[in-house]
Length: 104
Image (cartoon, rainbow, N blue to C red; front, side, top):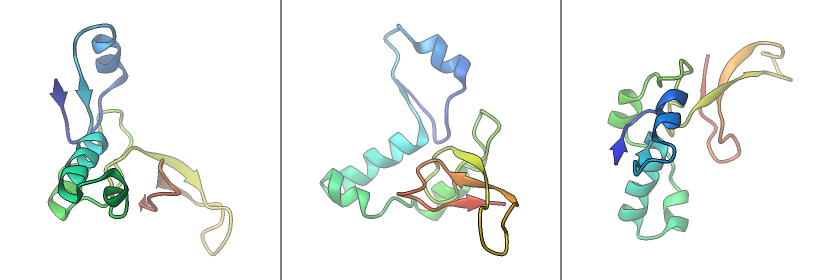
């Protein structure tokens, strides 16, 4: 088992594929911790944000896109469609409907 608070590169994932290696990334680790703390998956889903020390430990992942400041998942480039920032590019959490973390 290899555990990280960030994420694994495509090369690391390809290397582990087909081998008896379990890769656990930051979001999966955080979810497991929340399930143990809360007792059930349903209760763990109600508070996805990691504590501040985890948020600050995962600033950049190894695939060169930033990690979500709230849940440490990968975030993707998005373009604002409306509002005062319409047309501007920002980083938004890939789990958008569950987590609304963003970075400029």
